[in-house]
Amino acid sequence: MKKTILFILLLLSTIARLEAMAVSDSTARVLQLLDRTIEQKETYHAQLEQRIGQLKKQLYASTDPRKQYNLCGSLFTQYLHYQADSSLYYIQRKRELLPQLQLQELESDVIINTVEVMGVIGMYNEALLELEKIHPNQLSEEQLAYYYRTCRAYCGWLADYTPNKATKSHYQQITDAYRDSILLMTSSQIPDRDIVLAEKKLLAHRPEEAIAILQHYACDKADLKHHAFHHYTFAEAYGTLGETDPQIYHLAKAAVCDLQRAVREYASLQKLAKLMYDEGDYERAYRYLTCSMEDAVACNARLRFLEVTEFYPIIDRAYQAQLREKHVLMRNMLICVSVLVLLLIVSTVYLYYWMKKLQVMRRHLHEANRQLVSTNQNLEEAGKIKEAYIGRYLDKCVGYLDKLEQYRRSLEKLAMASKIDDLFKAIRSEQFLQDERKTFYYEFDKSFLELFPHFIEDFNGLLLEEGKIFPKKNELLNTELRIFALIRLGVTDSTRIAHFLGYSLATVYNYRSKVRNKASGDKERFEQQVMQL
Image: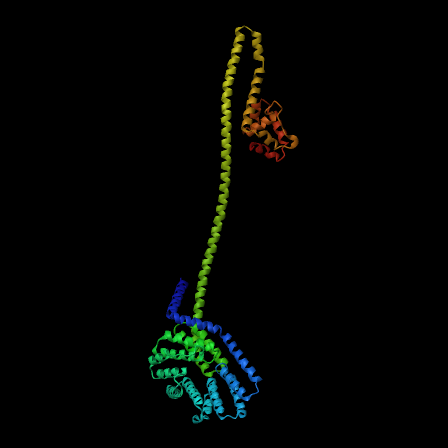
């Protein structure tokens, strides 16, 4: 009983959890797309590795320092959010090529590149030292825009990394100041401008205005990088408003873009993992956070790794607890299924037992029916025999009465005529009885063969070839056949047979023994077989 109650409670809690994490159809579809994208992550990584491999081949084949510098810059960009240590290596390669190029402005690019990759790795003090080497008034407009973006990212990292609220607010204000600088430097036609403007609205606690700006945002569909930034900023705006479903939707879209770009340093997936944890979807939360941790470690993105490890134990405990609940639920279900299977086996064995018993009963019933049919046939046959013989018996009785009357009158005539000698002669004569017995046997034989026309043939089928018995030319049955004809009619007592045929008991016994010894089969069952002909 306790196990049943526990099973019901677990089932109800699972249903409640599913209802709690219900999301809209569009969000559910995006989450499914994200799940498939995570499964295909290695494919996107392989594609990036292929592009990197092609760039490396071009680099090793080139002898032009300027082309080598540009190829190292491309490799730096490809590795920046994928494998930061390799990105730092190609910055060093660019630095080594500077003396050959003798271009002052390229040194500033290398320094800003170094700051950017150090920020990903988490070397914030070293990044600050590099930034101090830059003289903004000596940069071109394009370099200045790049410098402001890097400074904004650097201060944003510090704000995210700092636990102290006052210090965090300080860095956020500096970050916002760099946003102003970016807006002054960036053309209104560049997509990045709308995202930066939306970020300023969010910092000013005006998420509705940020959403309005982002809704009019448009960029090239193939530009996954800006799509990721756009959806991430959208999610931040909805998060400020407390609208969870659209926040999940846009974080999932941003994560899909990040994974399809084959980057390993990102913030969207771990934030989505926290939301999925809050929604009760522990399995997705655990999977997303595990993916984020793997990528952060592979990229050597220290800040992202710290973000993941801060929340990972909580989600891991919840996920393990959910797994234990599932195991308990599965165990209880397995117990229930096992009980049902056991009951099914018992029912099957019980049914099999009764089927076998029914089969035996049917076999007995069939045998009883067969015996009943045989008995009915025998009774029908006996009835026919009785009917035939009773009719003939009555006819013979009437005939014998008539003959006795005629015999009495003939004797009366002899007496009246005083023919005493003839009278005594007639009385002493046995001719009359012999004739009547002969006629009686003829009528018996005729009646029997009418009832059993194949008796002689079937009877000889029970005998050896040399022992077969056939009547003479003018006979219907001979003595041996007549004895066994009586046995076929059910008269098996030798005394009655001897009386019927007018023979001695020894004579009848000798005939029966003689014929039985000629049987082709079991001699003990010979007469029983005769009775079944």
